[in-house]
Amino acid sequence: MKMKNKLQQYFPMIRTEGEVLKELREHKELWQTFCEWEDRYQKEYLDICTGVKGLKLLYDTYFKAVMNPDTRPERLNDFLSEILGRKIKILKVLPNESARIASESSLLIMDIVVQFEDGSIANVEVQKVGYLFPGQRCACYSSDLLLRQYKRIRLELGKSFTYKEIQKVYTIVLFEKSSAAFHKFSDEIYIHHFEQKSDTGMEMDLLQEYTFICLDIFNSVIHNEGREIENRLEEWLVFLSQDDPNMIIKLLNRDPVFQRIYEEVYTICLNTERMMNMFSKELEILDRNTVKLMIDEMEEEVVEAKRKADEAVRKADEAVRKADEAESRAKQAEHREKQAREEVDNLKKELEKMKNI
Image 1 (cartoon, rainbow, N blue to C red):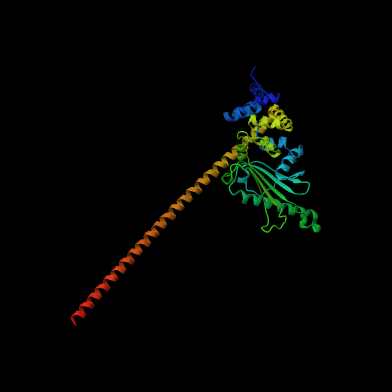
Image 2 (tube, rainbow, N blue to C red):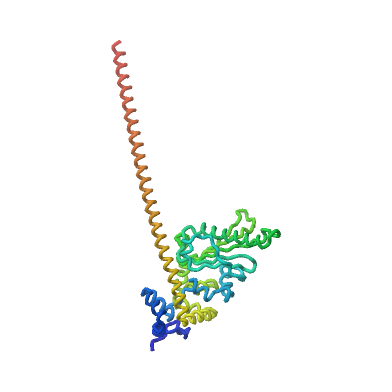
């Protein structure tokens, strides 16, 4: 008998590759779907179902299966409380009517809007690749959420409405691959909080706060030799973003609460039809992400090529200007030299006249 892998030792319900393939072959439609996948996706699916590697639970269908605020509110409550640094409780999930353009939505792999008991709102999203200008974009999304809250409350309260009723709006963004600006700032700091403050120390609640979490930087840091999981937030980040069995086992040994959640995950894996549907949806998201990323990279290349061409034109124009200036200076110098010679000649003539007197 083949020796169990590391995760199978923790979760006996995890099946072998042979068992998974046997069930797939017994269901014609599932087997056909599996065979249509590229080899790398077939391998990834089998690796997940057999515990060779873990599952990245930040992806939309997986996240909502184990972190659904309607069925498991305590989990998302705990995660968001750790991010925001205060105890929160989700009241309800709000419809996401974001004003973001479609091309931006295509790079999201998870997006959820929730309202807390105190009336404040949080938009939590996971981006496969960090957008350019994250600050400007998130300021627009946050303002959109704030305005929607204002309109909703004003409609509900009518004449009794006051601005005191408007509560905070939190924008929380997790990047699988963060943009260069974050790496340029630090390859060790993976979480950034932003809020508006006065330069005088006067306090005023301006309602909008932002948190950016760079999972690629976190994953690099957490894998450093001798680095341990340090707090509850890091436990959640490991749970949601890591598929490395060694890191998952380190988490399980630190906090058995996650053992129960992973058991739910691997119970889902036993339901082959459900797991295939979830995996297929994630592949669709990845395909859209890949296409959008390629388009973005091509657009960046075009912009960079235009910038270089413009710079070359600017330098050429500058060279022409300098050449014209040099030519002008040379002509001026030649003219001054001619004038000087004429003056010298005139002086000589005057001297000759004076000698002849």
